[in-house]
Length: 287
Image (cartoon, rainbow, N blue to C red; front, top):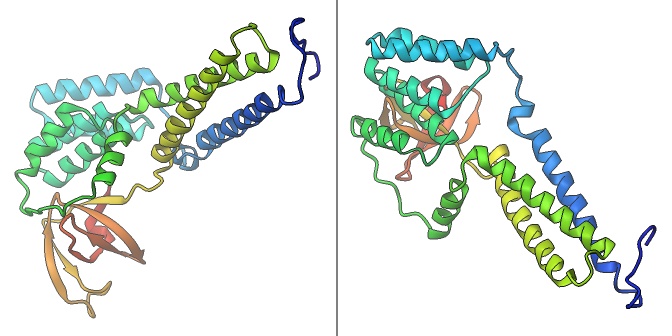
């Protein structure tokens, strides 16, 4: 071990450096995974709009709030959309935009923006309350199929930690893992090896668990593509063709659907109750 010293009262053995070295390699692999996640997250792959100065975005947001309070919901919605067009997004902007569209009677756009707000802040009480409220106004009453409890636990875990805290937590756990591993390799402070080993293993487990969660959330791994119906009424067909498809059922504005696959300008949708059919992509807005 280059540059390292062993305490005078113990003799080095062949097994001593092996375990820290293995842990150190694991640290490097995890670090590479974290960096790869940051590099290849959808936000990094998507074209980045030219961001307006933050002061202007705050001004537009405040202007939208003022217009909303004055009852000018159309102009308020335009201000919030200008914030998003400038390259900034947050749960608050989507939530307020959903409120403005709700006041304008645009149920589909209200649901769409509440759902987008919920993606960024899954545990926002106001967001969930307004989603439930607008859901009572929808024409389609869909009873979801029973869900396997393991999937429910996974969904609960994926939304447990807010998006803004998950990344720093992963970095903190990785830092703790690195510090514990370096101290183990150096063998200092003496007499703390057992404590440092436990700290390294705990940090490793936390880094893998939280890092995997971060990776899944940022890349959308395993997350279904969902959309909201924008048309007042849309016929769901048995095939992706107006001529060759038969109407199997109809859906209405504001209904959330899952997209299973696409065929040119068509999407095969699945409702929460298991119904399947084809809709034109023009009738949908992706959440």
